[in-house]
Length: 73
Image (tube, rainbow, N blue to C red):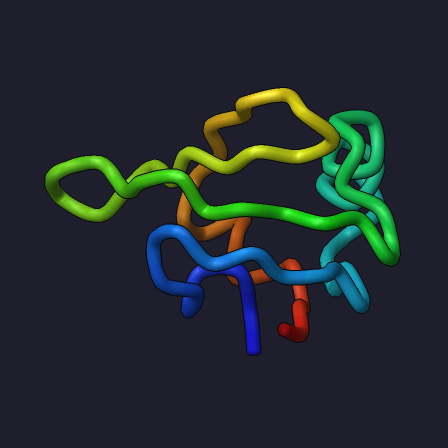
């Protein structure tokens, strides 16, 4: 399952990031690392972008980027 598939209000754990090196490094710099807990706060009205909470910080990422983040509940 990817982060883009998670329902609002759900907390998941990151298992892997499958992306090119540039995107992967950007996500890692934001604190999205293996084992990090992510809560999906909300989606924009048209579904993109996605607001998430990682390590107590609210972040907004594109839905396309969220498809590269593998998660489990």
